[in-house]
Length: 209
Image (cartoon, rainbow, N blue to C red; front, side):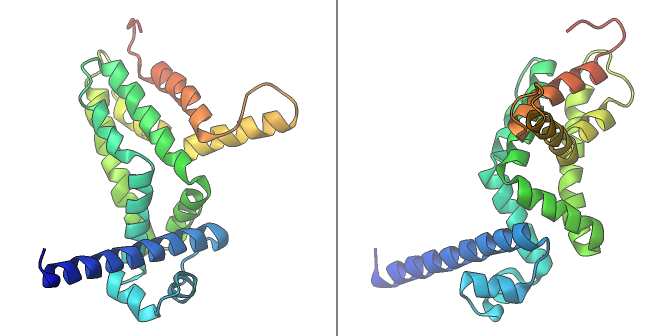
């Protein structure tokens, strides 16, 4: 490797490290405060505010990067597996499982991010674009089910929303605090309940699972 190539590689590694540090700072700030202040993120990441702008262009660009990081670390790449399975119900189950693992990865940050989307139009578009991809996947997988109801795609989309897993986990947590049965109230446990709900909602008349 030439000295110039080495310096370029080292420089790129430094840029990547700075970018990752800013994204981590944004996630932590969002989880703690429910908002995104570029000044606060820059201070937490120990960089200049101009560096945040240079790397991401805007608050929306930074939040796009946060979403990308959550998707990567939350295992969303595994979602492709669902579309390779021959059995349509196994494919739907895998879709539900992967979504549960993704939503569970950083539950607090995801909750804050989606709450912010309801208040901020720009952030709302970021989340809406990503939800649209899940809606498309739900349409493809539900379309493979035998004798599925006409609204199968919409049902699968709604039942695999973060809010569904989060609500089920919250109920399980409340039951556990009261000493009732229900298990640990985390989103991965809620996934089993979502699978049952999906199967009950999407099975067609006279269809057997």
